[in-house]
Image (cartoon, rainbow, N blue to C red; front, side):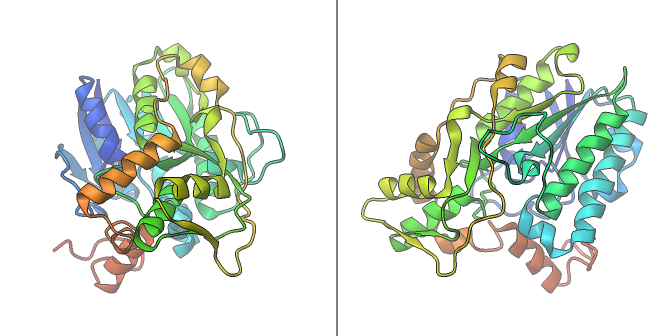
Length: 342
């Protein structure tokens, strides 16, 4: 297939695009370029369309068999920077992309949604039919776009809503603002595993390579199998409380101790997730990574690449700080459009 991947220069896209290409697909990227040079390891270049989601036109997606939509302001801190901009980019811009794809007769549209739209749930793990309860602007826009995509579904347009669990794992465009990466980086740099909440919230976790494999399986599945489906992406065994993640980090980093940050309170995002459906719908998707294996691999990659906690918290690896730096340097205007790329 000829596939357009939006946000290909992000954390997930930098892992997914090589997998798609290795599987025989022709891949083109569409990206605003915010994180293009935020690499900690080499990245193979692919043909790229430089475009803000808010400016996408049907000609940008013409001739593709599928769109994989990863782009957007992609975590809660960025979403809170300006909630109206989050709405304009993540919802309005993404809907513009979907409408352009439909007009250009792109049949398959794979959307990187998020399990965060479940918000706070009770004792039972969330399934795909669980009512949404988003707690942040980022999660709200995921829910809104899912509903809009389902409304667009017809015989010629097949959205697939892939609700990713919280990602972790090595990527050439590493993120230090992911809970696993942050806990490990602090432990390796200071000998302390610092928990910023009370440690009780539940999080479903999934490795970035397994996310990429789920999208590949959705891309290659028969149309009638995935048409209009919502799928939680992850594994039932990979639901953890934050304190459990911290305990595993302390085992990986010898001699480290767990500490609770002063004033830590329960996180309002607290949910476990059921991943039965994706295994039934997409038998080709078989998650390969556990948190324990990922932590061992990340530790080794951190050491080999000289990754420190300072680097993880810098503009190169922290999404909010990168945008703030571009704003402070005058390279981005207040509406997050480029003034200069030099």
